[in-house]
Amino acid sequence: MDKITIKRPVIWKAVVTDQLREELRQELRRAINRLDMEIQQLEFQSKRILPELERQNLTRAIEMRQQIEEEKQKRRQALEQLNEQMLDVDKLETGEEIARGTLEGWAEVSVGDDLSAKLYVEIVTKDDQVIALREGRPEA
Image (cartoon, rainbow, N blue to C red; front, top):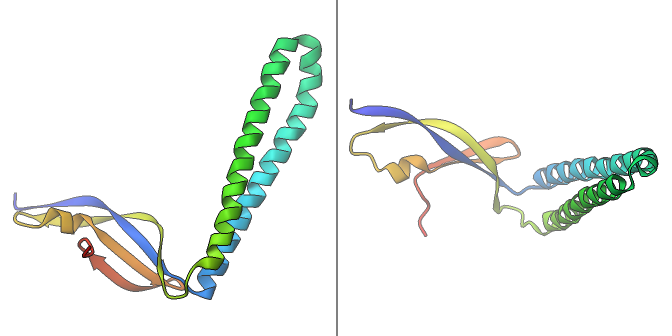
């Protein structure tokens, strides 16, 4: 066997434009809204469940209240991070490349190939148009 096909990660980078900034803001707003709704649901559940549970089993009610508060606190911390990210979006320089995610792709590897070069590949987009494909680790 002289060659094999392997699955490899593909790094997706995007060039910062006004359109990308707006997309990032919208994604963050959706995530913020989702977390707000989760916090509201937790509060609703605690108001609905805890009074009955307190009558039945006070110890269990205290544990449940603490658990709900911990979950709400996790979501509040996530909200803080999202709000910080929203501020960071405004600081992005037009034209700079940012990582948007990781995809998967296939590569054919043959005997004698530089495996580290084959394993590293990037797709660069600008306003959803692919503008570059790069293979091999960038020079440091």
